[in-house]
Image (cartoon, rainbow, N blue to C red; front, side, top):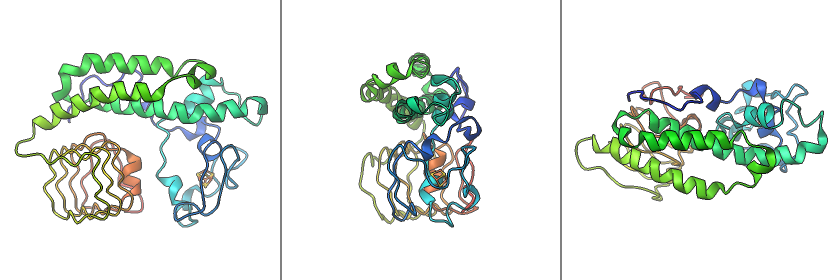
Length: 274
Ligand code: SF4
């Protein structure tokens, strides 16, 4: 994958910087006792493991303590944007009157930052250069929206924006995958839960939004496959090749299983539990 002209805001602003965030994912979002969380927590209530400095008290042993769900969440940098930009560095403990608004803005901001991440990914695809101008325009527009006031962010129609951007991402994906020789499989939105796809040739396939929970993808060839929004929870990626995979996120990898022999897209890290 060749880096062309990634988003002007830089990849850095799309990486979670927990030290600059007021623990928003640990307060604003709800979770329910399940295989992913050891306890129930309603939206707006701080998690019992959140410390006074907005750090997680069990960060190093989340999986062991039953909080696997926390390890597969990525705010794409929305936490620090809301904390430091939208609310100017004043936290919800110091200003409890603005806590409700801050917690409402966070999930919206996360969606905007996720879109920025995908657009930035598409801008790194040399094969998609014919749509780079439109992508860059989209990036700058969304980036500007993330810097609006809390009230303006809450008034956004994010679904409509997502629809517009998705058209561009789809085009970029088609252009990138067209370079891959051979027949490309189309599993867009498919229910492949638990599917046996060991060793499958999925080069350049569309797996957009596919449900791949617990699927056996061991040894599968996923080079250049589009995995945007695919649910890879507990999928077996042992020995799979995801080189040049499109729109793969760190959270997707964290949710899956893999080994030292799994080949990853550039810029992503091998999860610690593999
Ligand atoms: S367990 Fe830690 S990371 Fe998960 S919500 Fe609680 S404080 Fe946050």
